Image (cartoon, rainbow, N blue to C red; front, side):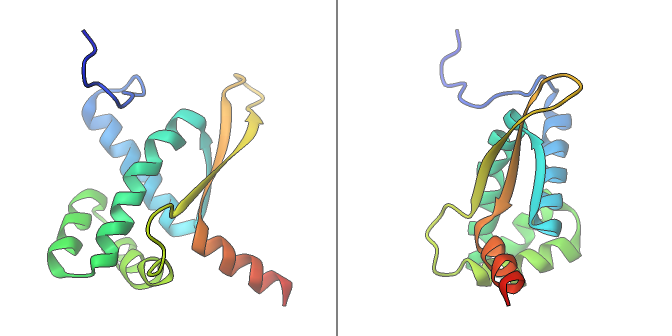
Length: 128
């Protein structure tokens, strides 16, 4: 029976899946925008949204919780200092996923995931 199994396993063992999500989240926080397959993007969105919500709290306990998941102190510092402050007024929906078509090699559906508030800053800096 599949009762209460709401998340996809991405055909990976638990440890590999956790490491994959942490690495994707780290790349998204570092670059503000990444391109990955659509199932990975769908799995990563709630993971990153919860990290940003923890970062918005800003206390020591939430910083330690995020650090337990991401393992890179400079990335956690950037999340708390830059991204959480940019998303302070937003009540959720910190990421945007845009489908971009299919990969050439294996026709896997691809998607771009970007941070919404970071994208606004990048677009406004390009206009001026």
